[in-house]
Length: 219
Image (cartoon, rainbow, N blue to C red; front, side, top):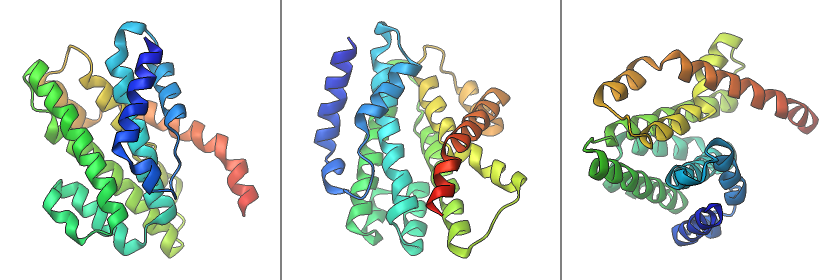
């Protein structure tokens, strides 16, 4: 079962094509898949693993667009297009960002369609908001770096629990359960229940502890 999931993810990634074209970004499909297996290990939850693998792969590439390659002007434009979720707005983007947004737009719309078809709930506004918030958090970090601003701990954590991408991953995981309700979506969006915020904060701090020595050496 897990081998079938990996084969599915590999074919999806190859068909998507951004791994071959956006060579500046990390191509970590296998790591993304193993992460999904660690989260959702039971054989019967193959679709959940496939979704988490896709989401992780997209996050990795978009993160590198903000961290590694994009200029400030390009990142502002990309963030605006993600917020608007308008495929017609991509004409103002450079080609590499057009590819990235197309991949995100098509993948997320497909996931939303599946939930609508299977559970009768339109989750696209919910998903658009998750991804817009993630990109806005990346944008803020990029802006801080660009101007040389060092946020205090409160400012940093307020943004970092979102930029670690856990709310996106957990939001997608929620949609793969059989308990999706409109009320649940509203609660997730409006209040970010403590279980989401604090688990995201723990992940952020653990990630920072793991990478801090490497970052110090780079300086």
